[in-house]
Image (tube, rainbow, N blue to C red):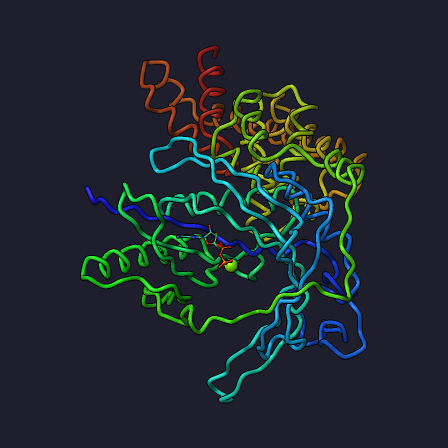
Length: 479
Ligand code: ADP
Ligand code: MG
């Protein structure tokens, strides 16, 4: 076994789910025409002043409470000074001393499947920068400032992670919390959730940590794992070959699966942080914190235990619920109202509503179905009023008012009754028309049943052959 140990600390940038930016009224919606959502404040025009978005504060506090962190009674914004074309003010408003959240922790399962606590150093608020779009075709760089001023929460972990896998576990846990609590949409393709990974290696019994490198801006769980693993191996090889790791920022190249040096500590910026004179300190009292706490739902970790212990759901079913609090709220309501076993309810849900949501990329609220309606439909299936296949058909219908669900079920029930009547008369006809075959059956040639079933199915294509066979046997045995 190798006597090397890897040490990792993550800085996760989470875009907060607010309608407007952290210091201006422009929209944070993703995908708009470039620069349509950049106000004078976002552009850093002289004479404009930032106004703090209260929702951003609330979301940061929710996160702090969710990780058992300390909410600062007083926190301040600072200017982090640097030049970059996508930062028109030449400084980013961030927090250095007195961040909004200090301390806290997350529990993960480590590589040996043992519970492990990962400590969090701090979580601070800041504004996102704009985007530089490098165009080879036009041989120039475009600047899009729509993202400038989008609220970010930067969550900084202690160097407690010991493998790339643990880092991913930790990141997934944070992702689950922020999406379940609607602190962030967590969309990694759109950059709402991204991470810098600090990586170092040391010998197992070394007390001191090794020199770290920082891997910038990795935006998928898969690449975080790959980039960290590459970097661990690179550092081990470097040291074993007699070299030493230098503190630097490195970029991960997804295509080549390597990390490349970007800038070293010597070239690092001196940001000359100082308190932002345009923004007063944020003062938060107990009452404000309590109100936020009282409005928070159960956390994903507690919810998981409850779904396991109280409802005996499978891990797969639980993951679907913890991935989306709208679905979880819907199912919680259904479970309260229905007498049907929760696991069965979930299977009905997954094979109908959830399937449609995924196929057509719809949200829970797009489905226009209430928990009551869903309960009615499921109990109609359980009571054999309608068939399982009918669920999907009903889900596909425009359900706008709750009053109509009984009517819809009745309609499907009538159609099913008509089908049954039709099948019964088809069976009678086939038996009457084929006396010779009936005779053969009576003599013990039971194989002939296939012929009867086939004749009926010719005129009732979608029916269940098993049920038809049973009916035919019943009649023939009584002739
Ligand atoms: P800085 O202020 O330079 O960004 P911090 O002390 O805030 O440095 O640490 C940034 C991140 O680096 C944290 O997530 C921390 O856990 C991690 N980190 C610090 N030292 C090490 C190390 N030796 N190896 C790996 N990660 C480290
Ligand atoms: Mg840092």
